[in-house]
Length: 459
Image (tube, rainbow, N blue to C red):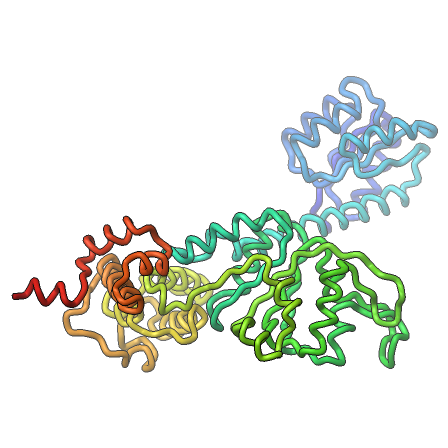
């Protein structure tokens, strides 16, 4: 049994009864109606998967019934029955939302074939739509933690450039979330319904790069048994994400540069250029400017990629994001591990905030997952943290709540940046990405002053 319901509307009793019986024998539930008025009642009172309707019936016509069906059962497949020679009427019905039409006299096998084919196609469309939504949701802007001014500014930039197809270079240490940001850029703008193709450039060899990037024709080389679509064509209309671009072999960089400049590729073994329209997002944890100076990265390719540059700061430079990240990953792994952990206690959060997080967001996610595995449904304490985190020295007068922890580490961060800029407040405000007046307000709020000033106050 298919479990699907078909609404059949036709005023010819013999045809209606016989067709209803054939459809039932195929495992469908059938609601058979003698006219449009009864069919409309059925639409209002039942969930239907498909509707087969004659266009000419007493009362409400088949055309009007299509309009009602589009409102009452927008996902239903609609097939219209029409007299031979009324093709123009059938075309008009399809413009209104019908999926196909069948001419009288009906061949029941043809009706069943079309019905099953259309339902299978519609199921696939619905499944793909659902998958797109499920894939897109984890990379929505709302799922990116941004409490620090630096991350808030980055997200503002990403929102602006999501509306255009310009190339983007994302820089940052390993584990800072470069691919997550690239996906947010893709799914948060004009490319959201197009492909997102991620490529690890560090795993590509010179011999395979061209065929992987651009594809190949059947017979182009030994083992090429069929045509193959490359990354550029697969990403057409969407985003090609080149991770670890700094590890791309030097000789291969010219191949990539040519495709970017020409906005076209040619498959290996073919001589026909194929135009492509993609947003190229490259990511690296290397200093590409130094790589250019060292002759390890092409300068012209660097400038092609570096149209818009985003640098994600390491987690140690934005400690105000840490409590929010902890809460985010506790929620995530409560769901995935099927547990009900209330979260971390204040002392554990304080220890986490003081950790250096050399692995950045990826490391903090790993720590939270491990902690929840062993803590189960109880609150995570310091003893539940990995030794590498737990052993980090903490002061005996450590603050014990989230707001105070965030305030304390904001204070320490400002002190560090002040010292790095020789207590030049203009330079410090610029380094922090805030206005000078905002910096002065922060200094007053947090009680931050130059050491000499502190010494003078204590006298």
